Image (cartoon, rainbow, N blue to C red; front, side, top):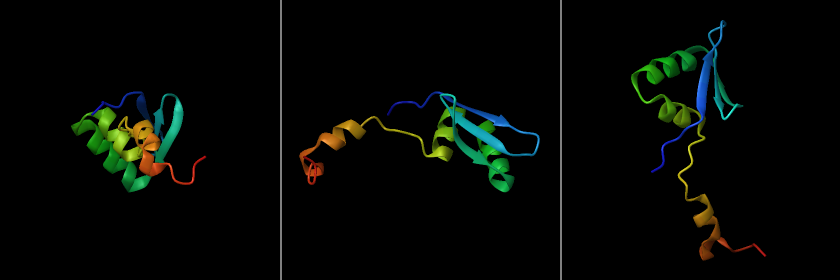
Amino acid sequence: MPQPHGFSYEQRADGSVVITHRGRNASTLRGGRAEKFLAEVVSGDAQLVMARWTGAYKFGNERTARNHPRNQSGRR
C-alpha cells in the first residue's frame, strides 16, 4: 500500500487546525476534533493521520477498478 504524502497542517490562533494536501485546503477541524487530531498527529505517522482524517487517502487501484468489466454498465 503506498504511503500518503503532500499533507501539511497549520494550527491557528483560534484553536482550529487547517489540513492541506498539495497546497489545497483538505479539511478544517475545530474544537474537540482539532484537539483530538493534534494529540494523534504527535503520537503517530503525521502523513497517515492527516490522510485518514481528511478521507483523502487513495489506494492506487481506482483506475483499475473503473476499467473492470463489471463496472462498465451504463458507460458508453
